[in-house]
Image (cartoon, rainbow over all chains, first blue to last red; front, top):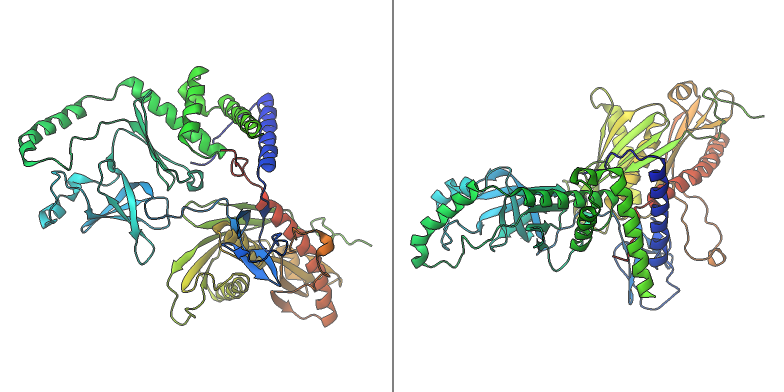
Length: 325
Length: 240
């Protein structure tokens, strides 16, 4: 998702420029660290025992930057953090991906990375929930679990020797995602937090912010149908749960929930186009602001709301900086 | 007495520069550099695991692929690839990621003279966009000796064909010290990374070209610094 096509009229353009200028000023005030380009010297003041971290190197007794970014200091460690970094996966990241290929005993998923991620059949729960060895029949029935172009949520288990990712989806909250939208944003707008799964009760919408920049907004489905801990006694119930599944397929998502999904998806698109960090709070704020100002969902990507969002962000940051004193 | 060239520029004037980064989704880093009508698109993939046979595994290796605008790749493209590879090897820090390969792919979008310097600038910007650690930035310029005996910078294709001799020169960028100026030492002498010459010129002309080129490179490196420092307001936020 690149920039939105906006046609701003004159006043909107002026307001936008003013608001962006204010954001720049606030940012340069708030950020105590300086931005550097390659081969700039970093002021270290001849302190002892400075640890030179990523993005720095030593030249003639001076610490010189090798990357373009901002200088960060943590006690004795000085390093340069690049701003528009590409997605760098780590073990334990929550990832949303799309299945592009079914290979022997594995699925290949496209995530926002240079290589495709691999989800092994053995890292996935079988539909009947029993823990057993995967047989050839299971391999032939892989399509019944995930097909091509399905959206899947998983967790990074590790790296292969050539740098591609190994995923696992063994828990209830991972697996196929249905009834929603997948959005692509630049990966540096998503910071690692404690929680990536959000259930917005007000809207009956579940929001999954993948660390790779894929965001899923969809209707909130109650999980627990295919519980892993089902005993044998619950077997006769499985036929009933199958019926329930079919029933769910027959019942469509209510219109209101769909509208909420679209509203939140547009809020995400807007924030991504503006380059603001995506957090649940900011997405909820934007969606609520649009609802309270009675802006149509399709107008959320229009020029007026765009400018209003920037102005609101300026206000919020001024408030935050004032609170800090 | 200011000589005016065919397109109305003075001898020391460069064509309008434009640089945009982060264009391609799949590449780790990408940049598009244009000087007038000469436009080159560079994409960087890497570092990827494994070096090729014959390369030193204790250092990172760089692989360059040059795609011409029309036609197949021939000897001229291989020569460009080799020059670029040597230049970029000298600016990258090779010991940071040993036993890896970084690939740089260049696509010529428009060719109107000074193609190799444009490509070097584009690949340097793409390396920065990919976040690969560099010792310093490489800034390239083309200086030519015209028939009138004066040095012209950044010639167009028509001018290049009429020139007696020209040289592609690559300098490191001027480093900007964050320390106050008073503490910095005496200005170091200008170093040169790469020099490729075509045609016959006297030594004095060559030294002249070096001087002009170095001054022009300071301007280009200022432009590069400005374009690398423009950021989104949201990125710098510490308030979120």
